[in-house]
Structures are given as C-alpha cells and as structure tokens.
Length: 427
Image 1 (cartoon, rainbow, N blue to C red):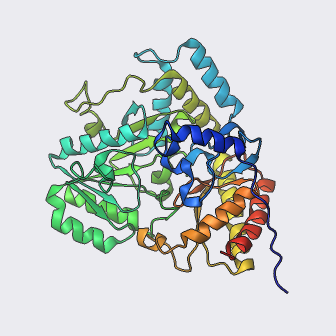
Image 2 (image 1 turned 60 degrees about the horizontal axis):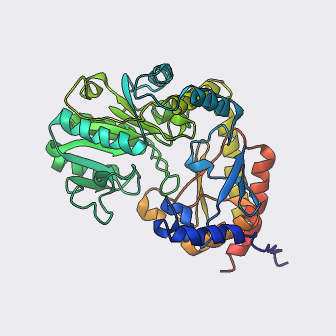
Image 3 (image 1 turned 90 degrees about the vertical axis):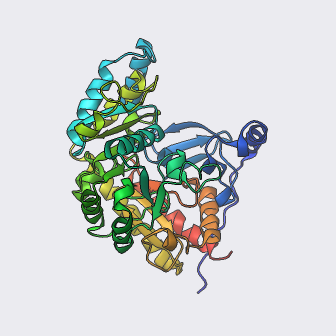
C-alpha cells in the first residue's frame, strides 16, 4: 500500500513578511545574523515576539516547538524563572559599572573549578572577542604567527579565523585550514610547518556543519601533535562548554587544551564570552602582561548573574543525565522515521546536540557534509515549519535540546518528522 502522505498548508506569515520588507530597507539581507534569513530553507523569516520553555511565538501568533534554542545557550529553556529573576535583580542594581563586580568573581571561580584547563580567565563581550584574544595570546606566547584551524568549524567573525570570507584574505594569510578528522593530514602539516604554527584552534565537536563528532583518539592525537610542535591547542567550547558536562568537551573526552574559548551558555542567553587556560599564557594579558585585550561591557552584572543562575541549575547531578536521555530519544525517533520512509538520512548526536544529513554516506568532515542533498533538507525543514517545529535557521546548523523539552515534545517531533520526510521525498 502506498504510504499516507499528510500535507499541511504553511502557517500564516503575513505579519513576519511585512516586517521583513521593512527590515530589507534597513539591514543587509533584512537580518542581523545571516542564518536568520532562512534562505537555505526557502522559508519566510519568522519575527519572534516571545519564548517560554521549549516554545517560540511569532508575530503571526504561530507557536513552534524550538529545536534551535538560540544556537545552544538556552539549556534550561526560554525565560527560565531563576534566570529571569537573577537578571532582574542585577539590572535593578545597575547594568554596568566599568568596574569589577562580585558576580564576575563568583562565576569565574565556578568556571575555573569546572573546566579542567582553566587556571585563569578573562571575560569578554562575546565569543568572537575571546577568539581574537586567544590568537593574540598564542602569537605572543610562542613568538610565531601561523594559526591552523579546521575546515567547517566556526570561530566567530574575526578575519583570521574566517579567512575564506571576502575581505578577510589579508588577515588570514598566516592561517592554514586542515580537514577535520583526518589525522594523517594533521601529522603531515605539523611535520612541514611546526616551526611556524602558534596554535591549532578546533571545535572539539563541530556544530556549524551539523554535529560531526571527533573520531576515537583524534583529539588526543591533536593534543600530542601540538605539544610536540610547541604550539598551543585552543578549544572552541562556545557550544560544548557546560552542554556536554560541567567540564565541557575536555571533561567529556579527557583531553586538556592550553586555551579555551567560552560563550553562549556562559551568559545564560545574554551576550558574553571568556578566554581561559594555562596561567602562564593568560598572565600575558594586560594589565599583568603586554597583550592588549579590553572591553567596557565584559563581565557586566546582568550577564554574569544569568551565567551564575544557569550554572547553579547545572550543578544538579541529574541535569546531564536528562539531557543525554532526551538526545538519545530524539536520535532514535528520527532514525526510525527515516527507516520507515526509506529516506537516505544520517542522524549524528553527541549528548543533547543533534543534526540531520540527507546522505547515504557516513559523515566525518566537511567534504562528507557537502554530499548531503540541500533540496531535500530544505523541503523537510519547510514541512516541519508547517507542523509547528522550528528547525535550526541554517542548512548546516545543529539542533539543541534543553531541560524544558518533554518526552511528549520529542515524540511529537518524531511523528512530525515522519510526515515531513514523506513530503521531502516528493521534491
């Protein structure tokens, strides 16, 4: 019997469309972050007005089950009462002082206690500033200029880590891009260039090309290669920090970096970041050392208070077990949906981070990701939007779960995914 194909009309978007037309006259592409335009999905950008728990509400009064969670930082759920209360108390005392505050000290002490590599740290406005500081520190500490990074990994918007963006080439001339999960390529690279490489920066679990876990032993091998070369190993834990565990990916995989960049969860959803690591490296930052790094809003009380509230909740021993169980439930349900339709699809997961790749091949690196079918993914995402499931806003972005997602929510996603896959087969 031919499988039942349940089609649903798109949700109303008139108000979002009208707002987007105004935005196009003001912002490049109508947005202030490119993935929000939803161009890869062929969808109308949704203008959100409210979020609670695992639910988003848009300007057209549609509600969505959120599988993006703002790209990962909303780990307790939107508008978590304890976070809102902490932010409110902090704002009522003053939004920023351009002076030290107790909240930054308390959060810094907790971060240093949790993350194995962080002996000292510096809070920043954003994760992008943390990356810039990390690169500056690595060059000053080693006396070398070269920076190596992995293809498909994202480390903010600094020219050095972008390199391949128009206008960023000059700053990226001393940057090398290596294929992820290819240990032999890394070995050959360090044999040839070890004397010039200040640092290797990696996402221990990349999520900007979908979730692509490291192969067994790969991170340990990178640790050994950088140590032998006299280069620093920088972990970008802006996503994995506090999401894979209190000690992030370093605790999860048992590999310790020299420097760690943090963001997202650190500020409980407010803009924030940090660079931390070995004391002898971090001590090179001004005013103790010669490396300039400064920020008027770094460590501002509302963001620090939010970070304290989130990390206090994550001290609950059961929090990470819950996140793991939710991730496993969604992974299994999506795999069953794909098997039930015959759609060639790979589901990849680490903890509460997941991604879908419409391909028959295993996915280990950017080249494998590129073999996925973008038309099929876009058709699937549109069908999910029509069913009130808010997919990540970019083709290569990942799904994130929170403590606010219920078992019923995840079962609903899997039921809707089965219908959406059947529609996607018809493109």
